[in-house]
Amino acid sequence: MEPRKTRREEEGASVGRLSAFLAGQRPDRVPLYLYGFGFCTRMAGYPISRIYDDVEKSFWAQTWTKEMYDSEDLIRIPFITHGTAEFGGEIKMPSSEWSQAPSISRYPVQSEEDVAKLELPDVRTAGLLPMLMEFSKLQDNLGSPIIPCTVGGSVSRAANLCGVDKLCRWMIRKPELVHKLVRLITDHFLDMIRYWVDTFGPERVILFGGCATESNQVISPKQFKEFAFPYLKEMGEKALALGIKHIFYHICGEQNLNLPYWAQIPMGDPGIASFGHEIDLTTAIEYLGDTCIIAGNVEPAVIQTGTPQQVYELAKQCIEKGKYAPRGFMLMSGCELPPMAPPYNVYVMKKAVEDFGWYD
Image (spheres, rainbow, N blue to C red):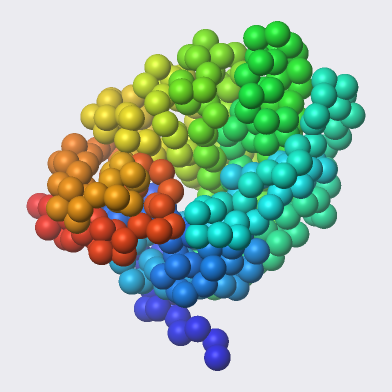
């Protein structure tokens, strides 16, 4: 039996609180954005791996969970291992309750010599891209915004080619190799963007980039400026020139000292920027609030292990700090919802926006 469509799906993707912010309007209240994937398959009764290896189950598990929590999530397949399989490496799907996402079993780059052997993959056939295109065609058929996987975060995805430890050593000892890898992955992203734009048109495509290895828990602000900033800026400029309207970056982890650079990266009108709990929302708004919808940033560990009262209080604090951000604010987990998070702890985030998120 075909899954029942929600009223929002029947009326089209233009309906919703996030859509209002994207159109430069203010909705009735602060939107809730769950940023949950494995959590969604759990809510639908599927194994966590279905979010990554089954187009239909992934789409509907996310859709049903959105309906359950009245959230505004942009439905997508969130491959944090993007680049590994596409450049010839191997990944492993999550297979236990403690596996949150795919992991890398073999990197494409094992040595310095391997860097020179890398070639840009064919975005029509490489790795998991045919499945991601199938997912986007389902999005297109059902009137959903089209999100072509994780496009952005070139340093994070370069780490998927050789490993974070090797990438960090090469930043110090062999910086030219890092630039080669980041250049390749950026060009791969641009090829993907052009392919998706040619297939669907730019109007409904929203880009998403996750940037974890860029955090100052891994690299310094000086290294961010050299190895991340110019490529992020270039990709944003070229994507917007193709007609893309909005780019969504999750600025993961401790990136306070990177924020002056993030403020110079084009993300559209408006862009969307979400933050880990390490960045205070007041600071996030100071740097990016005039150009981006701000989203964040209830600490995931508290959602997983804290009491409902603790989650509710953190959500309230986030709403009070972010509610009147100039381009809009969405309450969100500070990173992906833990798949095993208690559903009631997630519900109290919804309760918090209903209690404190209404606009006058």
